[in-house]
Length: 388
Image 1 (tube, one colour):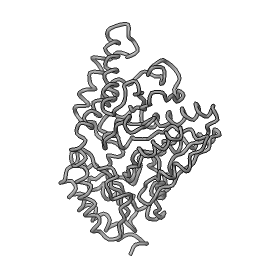
Image 2 (cartoon, one colour):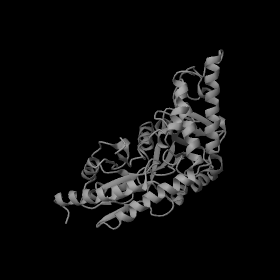
Image 3 (cartoon, one colour):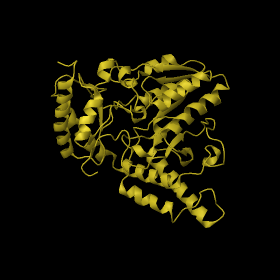
Image 4 (cartoon, helix red, strand yellow):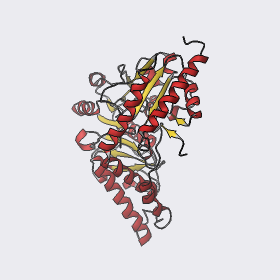
């Protein structure tokens, strides 16, 4: 694996050693159930769970009582949307608002809610992927229950004006949720200061373990319960907590937040170096914004006349891992809904590659990628019946 250059960190990230070290005791030595509080082994586990909750709260600028652990970001998104819809729908609020470029955990949940009788407004974005707050304001109705707009897009990296949108929602007495799965650990987030009602995150996006996430829920906001059963998570989310995963997530988030400025500079420098090289290549389009309002490690590029699958295969033969978009849409023959949403043609969207950098990448790797990319794109175009 040492020879592999992994540039798909938007899909998942490697678990760093300090996180592994923090988790290991909870697989064996401290194996208790956090809910078994009447003996020492369970009480120790309960203490570790509380400490992890407090750590996550410090990292995100919220109260420990506002942190609810889940199995992943998709569960957190489902809980925020379905829980809000069912609670407020019973009061006649059956209208929801989102954008056309959200992650499928949001879009598919919205489609499911439409089948349950809810009405959903899907807002457009501009060519850089930005939602216009004025469009949000115009779409809000007396029966609007929730607005859900992602913090940062997982395919093009655009950072949305979520603070402004949250303020608009509050002015109209509408709950606001943000899917921050790509943003947590990558950009500064202070939940309470930013005015969010709910926020979703997932540990494996910031060098934590897979299979654990959280929904941050502002005090006073009570979406209906998604998973019924025991009294875990203060009776709001049933199921024995994944203690080792939760401890690992808390540690990973602590590391990510503590090194945020340094990490951002490193990732941005590598992304920009790759972008500068790509811009010297013929017939390329940088997708999303080129400004500061984008994730530091994400670069999405369309190479006219060179289908992404072919480029990725050639890169893989050189030991380079990249992607054509969201891992959750892998295997789909349809072009990216995000790229179509920002106005790309069907053909150009199918020629797009996402490079996403992580803490394990180096500037030397960028040089290797540039050389391999030149060769891959040139070869794919040479074989293309439609280019040239």
